[in-house]
View (cartoon, rainbow, N blue to C red):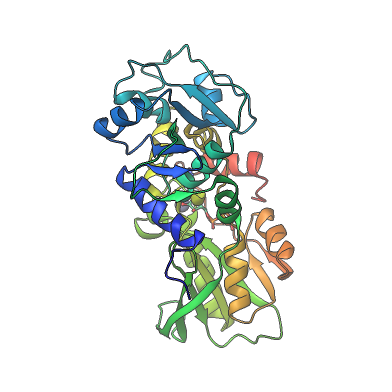
Length: 353
Ligand SMILES: Nc1nc2c(ncn2[C@@H]2O[C@H](COP(=O)(O)OP(=O)(O)OP(=O)(O)O)[C@@H](O)[C@H]2O)c(=O)[nH]1
Ligand SMILES: [Zn+2]
């Protein structure tokens, strides 16, 4: 077997590079994350030629900048832009304080594949989707390199889930429980499965696909319904004597905890949960719903009684070949902090609440 990194391994390195503030080479462009690039690196990049800031259509719309390529906008970086410029465009924190950041000039024509791949990479690194990019003919040695088309295809591919370890873990809700750890083969974060009792593999298992919510699950935040849903699901499985709860590390509907806190700041300014994601440049829901199906398959389950209020989870599982024999509603009490959030989930995201 060759010792040269595969594209998957290269992408895992690239995520780490971007988080550290190091540019990567995507086709014939240098690309650095607006959120992490240092003033020195930015100056070195601008010295190479005309730079653009690649943004998503959502973020560009908030900034009132022209979008010529559907999902991607390229804003020309002024020659005298200082180090704060990319972050000010990327991060909506200051939007209300300094609403008029423009006018902006958007680049038009040419190939946007490198920009699209750069944005996909930023999202997979859970950074703000905003990338400083400059064409480069002879990139410096030592930078991580990839071709945009294959990188995009690989970032969109489904990761295989390998079981790593499992052990008995008695729970308050169910003494006879086991925790399984699954590791994706693309270098992204691990996910967990709580197996309660010994559910039969030849009939639909009571199941929950729970996306991580540090604030709700661990801290008991009143802003969402996650913590109560987690415990209600475990209790129901404990009472039934069997079930499987997947704890998927897709914090903040896939945008990561730092971005979720940015979204919460926007919500404090009056935007709802969906608007906040858009103003940050994200889609409403950035989760890869294939992960849960992959883990269920790996555990030998092909049919579930799914505890959820989210019809997309049902559709996704069925699309991935897992039969949803029944949707089991998981309604938890409202409070004055989460009632608006739940209304928005029902109105905009189709949740059955
Ligand atoms: N971006 C963002 N994420 C949030 C917000 N509030 C909660 N979340 C995240 O939303 C996700 C909720 O996950 P789930 O409860 O599994 O899924 P769901 O789509 O609500 O569907 P159900 O199965 O009905 O609960 C978690 O990843 C939370 O961290 C928010 O305001 N913004
Ligand atoms: Zn939550």
